[in-house]
Length: 124
Length: 147
Image 1 (cartoon, each protein chain N blue to C red):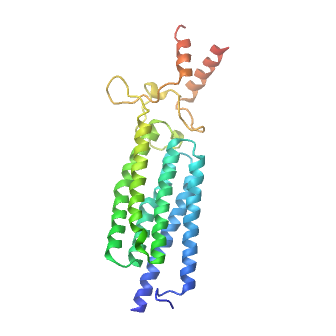
Image 2: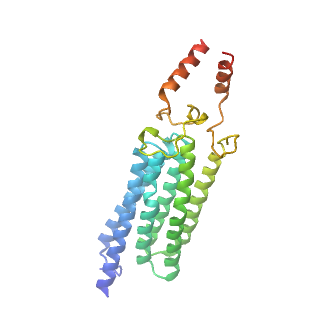
Image 3: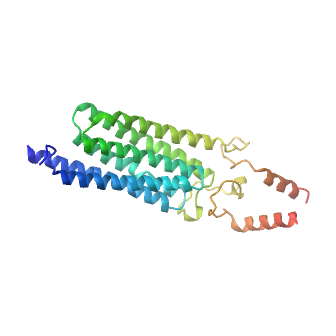
């Protein structure tokens, strides 16, 4: 028995299992980050990836009984929040507001091709 | 005392393993689910419950009050910020129509009048148009006008 109260084998097994779970979760989040068809899918994947990173830092700290990386957790969770909110506001700024002032948005600005199509439709 | 320490360690390691398992489920859900809202549903599992479990495990294992208070700070901060960012992302996702509307059971924000019902812009490739028939007619008209 080590001073941890666990046999070293048990600790090693738990460490390997925990890191395997965290690592495969991070890999799947990275896969969605690479494939995600839209910007918001990537924002969600980045958020999850940062949470998984902070969870694995905490797992490492508590398996090693080493509180050195604990302040890093605060910084990582703060950065995850600020990043996802700022990207969400940036994407939301691309939306047009309707001119009637009722706060209802009218979707995206039309592309040049669409405006051309509307102009062609108009004379008929 | 030794038995107590051992029991606390077993509880802590169980919490850590459960939190790590939640991170894995988040990754699987992110890859398998069809649109932004359901991916966010899967991705925010470890953001609250997983982080809480891991922080409880770390607070049991780590010595010293400073580390425990900082872990508590991280947990409270996650609880406060997760709803805010999820709300903002889902609102923008709905407005930019990154949402599979055929999979929604209740759609209280749906307003079909105005230009919002026009099929345009930034949908994912598998998103159906809001009015399939009108969209089909419109695209046929555009094809004829090109010819």
